[in-house]
Image 1 (spheres, rainbow, N blue to C red):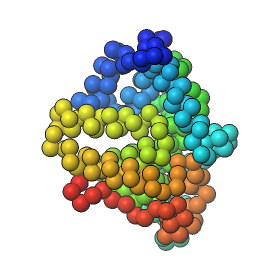
Image 2: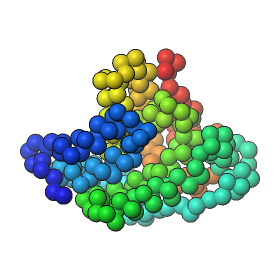
Image 3: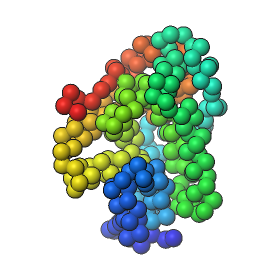
Length: 241
């Protein structure tokens, strides 16, 4: 479907707005990952071009996109046998203690491929298709590096952290969803939500870009040495959150 917005004044397509409201109302029922994939068939061309241009101009993106690195699936047992205090051991603890999927990107890619076959992703640039799949592969590793837990406001803080480092629509949709809910539905959430977003944004702007790293190659290195290499200290949302 061709977007109706023109280059001078991009607008939201009414059909996409319906999906957006579904996510704003209940992101558990209709997640941001679905909204992200649904957006491309309605996105104004000028907006897509701007996202792609911004992404490609990010320091480190050229090599990242040229290599198309994607790590092989791993076994939890292999992570658990790594040295205590290592990135890999921390990743193992994060996954097992929180009951998380060990190969999140593999599951997301199945959804992505299904939607691609239907034609819904035809207008999504190939570089951004790769970036979102790789982003899912490193998402939980970034939890370990930054110190943010997978719970509620910490998850939001990590999404804000990623948006600060990489102006990518998926991360922006997280901000749009949560700020819309706090504004129109849950005003008691304004302070904790904005504290979480501010925490992640400031951290993301203040440290080295973590988005393009081959973290799987650092699994055996001590986490206490890897973090300061990138200027990262264990994080956490503000006390009021």
